[in-house]
Length: 247
Image (cartoon, rainbow, N blue to C red; front, side, top):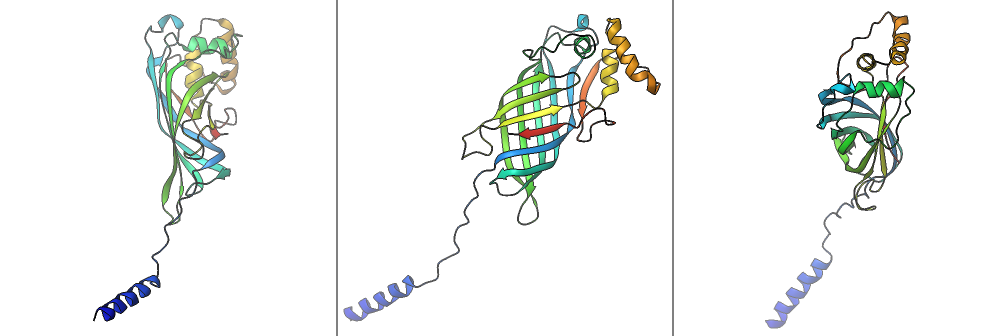
């Protein structure tokens, strides 16, 4: 009897050895990495609005916030890894604005012959987060990467600015870790911007703005600037499209 039981057990074990295995676990792809170039559309709201004159600027920091700016038309040919190809996403910006900022200062740089100060940092404690999305195997939208951009610095241009920072994380473990993210913002609400700068007491600044607008029969309206609007399409072929890149 003992031998018979042992034989049955041995047969069962042998059959188990040949039992079909379950489906193999899917191997997760490596995190997305490489170079990426996209367009961006949105608006950055300023609280309080940027005053016309420096004399009216407050002594306290203001706030600037851009929620869920749309990232579109991505060129992801330089990207490897990730669970889907990147086609778009969103970007969020939060920061404090340095006390003393005004449209008078912007006008001095744009039209008054005052050079751009590359060391100036009009934004305090800027926080940038980027979500990159694509289409998954099932045809549904999927999040490919969520990025936190640190050490963000602002570079001013004539009528725009750029935000540059580094993606937080460990290379090989986190998507795009260590890569540089640059957002180039070219305001499309140019009439509002020029109107705010038109209050500049420098006659050269006012004359230059008038020369730009008079062929179109536009008289600028002087008022504080409450937002920067930017678009993937630019504006009338004069203002270039706004972009976001990872390099």
